[in-house]
Length: 237
Picture (cartoon, rainbow, N blue to C red):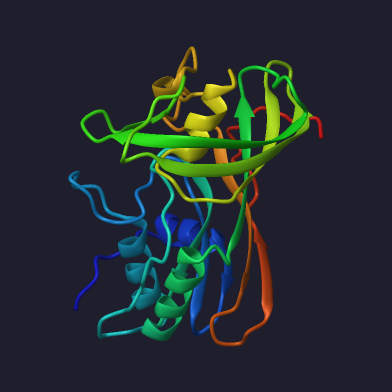
């Protein structure tokens, strides 16, 4: 397998975004706008970028293994866990499937929530054609609706926005974006879910801030945090 050549700037950028690495795990800080795995576009996914990076850094002439146990939406930034071995991937897949990895997000929202902290429980359904998720309302019942749970706390402000820390308890499509919009708090830049304007970089101000999980081989507790994007406005915590 021959991987493409990385420019010095791209190599340095990929290196600087590594949050944790050992023989089994690679945890990186995804940028808003990156895709984590191949899709209908021709854009290079994050997994392929780091395969090329490892091949160059470690002088690997053969194929580099990078597995993806979880995903972040394209406009979302932050902590992304990758597996460097099939054993780690299998165990991480089970952790994420069984809710054993605890994920915390930071979201800059356009309005102050009525409650400074709350548990949100909704039944969500996905419109495939629109690539959008909706809350079942007014006794609406759908066989394809799934229970979604998260809890949030108001932890900071900017001059115009409000910073929520969100603990995700289920992993539904566009869950945070949909549930926060449903309480009148769309995420900054998220036109699809009610924000009044887009962000210049095309992303949204939703950031996978922190993850806590058990290392798949060492069995040690890991907590890994990603710095917030430099494009965000100054936050008063």
